[in-house]
Image 1: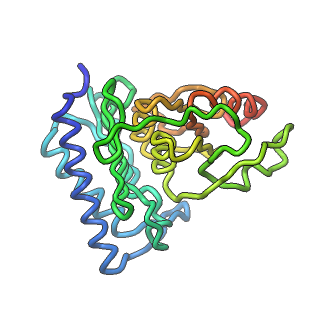
Image 2 (image 1 turned 60 degrees about the vertical axis):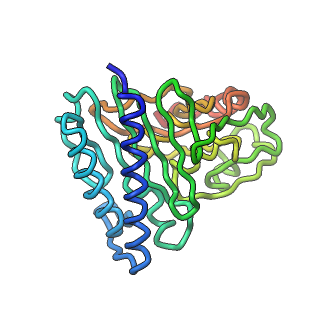
Image 3 (image 1 turned 45 degrees about the vertical axis):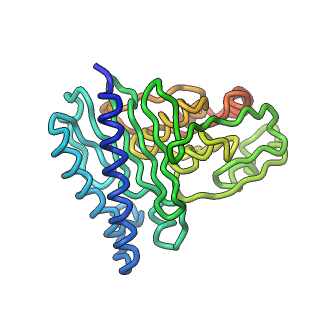
Length: 265
């Protein structure tokens, strides 16, 4: 059984909009910041958005499973036909430093693939959404990934230092690289044709990429790890070794340049 089409997508759009308003309210009153055991930053916006969305979504869909960055994993999700996959605040460091490009990223996953998704950047007023087979939208308008075929001069989102490292047998051509704190936002920008590609050779988790994967794919972009392996979701291990999200014409060249990095998988 697939996504309950409009009803599920309408549900997650509505709840994520409301959660965005909650996060903005908390930010306006001064965020409370702490650190996780791994040293990563977390704020009261992360935890409060997580709690509010969990209650609101599972009240509406009590038979759905749940997976979130801000909670310990629960193996019961593996038995659910559908699950919510949430990153309550993607780009927490950016939020804490005043960047407008933090997001709330929420997906519904069924049969190991996202079937409905929202990536919402409240401060920049951008709501990206998609449902399986229905295309992707930004604030209700259809979007399409870049058709650029040449790497020279391409617009990339990520860490500019990556492209200058000595791990590349052939230097990358000239790129225009900008940083954005949210992985989901970077992928959504590729979906909308605002950037030609984004890549990262650091591991990602399901909640980082599930929602944006559907949005990118529905806009015609390609998403995989650095060796071209497609993602699957709601498995026992949520770890993804790396990320490539690109317009379709550039994707083969990016994967070719990464082929020697098989030790990362």
